[in-house]
Length: 354
Image 1 (cartoon, rainbow, N blue to C red):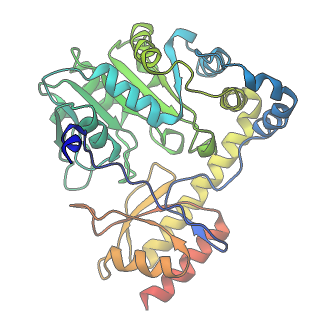
Image 2: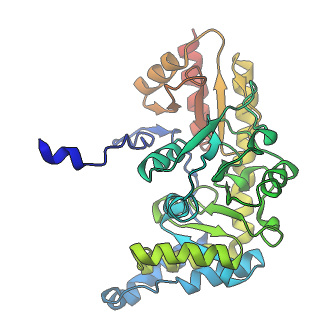
Image 3: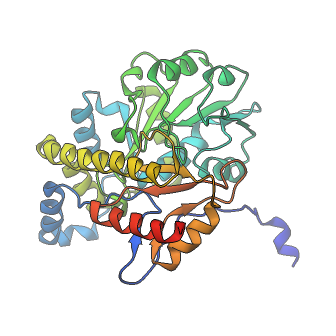
């Protein structure tokens, strides 16, 4: 049809499967296996008491949430931006900061949404190859560019880049905005957040989806200089002022409270303990396991195709993530579940490996 010639055609991002049914072990989308903090539950119960407020628009600045985050991290309110999950924050950042004829740089193996956004927003881009061991080479990013985005720790490789290397990239690109996507930072690595007062071209993006057990709430945030955040808000308010619902703002504010800090640390420690146990068990089965700084493991087996293992596990109602992509099509990404779920995984793998 003639009208199709005017359609902006893109290949969309493909998220992990969301299986429906019972007796399913879901280890494919890096969700937290434990419930959110008690304060979030209290906030949810309180929503019913204020249902009449749903007829009014939410605060476009989400000031309660931004203040709670600023207080939690010890920064100014003007250094915080919030959105509907880190994907919304990142997409808005691509629109705001990457308007150059020079290419946007990001790793060749990383969060695949980066390439989708670059194509959607018609941003010239260049994928920088990871080293053979899947680590990031900071020197490779010291070339002319129109911006940089790096996931740290990286996904799906699970590897973290040290803070000195991050600073080398940021300081070496004073004319570009550098985004560090820290979706998994609470499980390992060192946050670049302390650098935002030294570099006004640095934006640090985080989320409540992983370590805070709130993937269903869709709450993401960015931290940077007040000037950087103001530019981000200008673009947001040019598209949709009311992106976050009242409910999300309320429970997000509760999640950012220091009152539940002990619970947050307890849950994170449980995941880290299970992760180390899983790395050992899988190694005993012959898997090569990358040193993870996330809530998942990136593994490969020398004697079996990753696609075959993925399919065999799926038949047993155990879902892990398989990427049919160059360089990693022999790897699986396995989210850390509860100890009980991981035991079922080990049992299933032992049957598959026979």
